[in-house]
Amino acid sequence: MIGITDPDLRKKLAARANGAAVGGNGYLFIFCADLYRIMAAASPEDKAKMRANLSSSFFFQTAVLSAALALQNANLAAESMGLGTVIIGAVNSALPELDEWLNLSEFVIPMAGFAVGVPDEQPEQKPRLPQSVVFFENRYDPDMKESIAQYDRDMELYYEQRTDNKQKANWSQKFIGMLTADLPLGFYTEYIRRKGFALK
Ligand SMILES: Cc1cc2nc3c(=O)[nH]c(=O)nc-3n(C[C@H](O)[C@H](O)[C@H](O)COP(=O)(O)O)c2cc1C
Image (cartoon, rainbow, N blue to C red; front, side, top):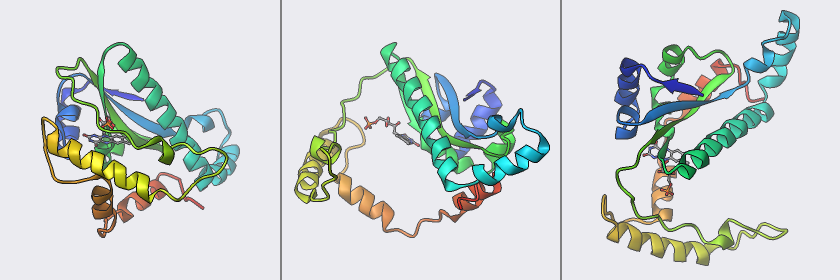
């Protein structure tokens, strides 16, 4: 975790990662996946051998999972104290400069920003996906068209009626629209490879 207390650094981040939460009030953390420190005590020869293993997609997912668990633990802790939070994946739009700004070593990659502050509003809760598509007993069930259609109707109503940023949309439409576009994501693969994750 890197706490961003330098106002200039925070301004630079906000200019690249949209949003009031990055530049605004509260405390900003950057949560990183970190497989660097695991090598700190190793000899140069052992480090070379460790890098070969750590560069695999297996350890990439271990590092990402560990960082995500730490982030959600922080989220729960903050909310239990009555604080408000925003997880901000958009800080990744400041790559690769984030490496230089935060002095991130090989095998350390930023996962998400996490803003914590005293909430000045209590927005209504978004409808949640139905339990039938998030919990399965013994076997995954891909037959979920009906449940998703119902959720899309709930989300349409929510987007139409919420106080701010009303829109005509639903959950499926949003993701289909986003994921059928030709997304320029090659930069991210190149970035994590440069950091040591060959993803073999
Ligand atoms: C991995 C991840 C990345 C996110 N990135 C952003 C972001 O860049 N900008 C933003 O405004 N919200 C982002 N969010 C959403 C907010 O954190 C949101 O307030 C939070 O997920 C609450 O969820 P809800 O809208 O389902 O209640 C992200 C959430 C997650 C889980």
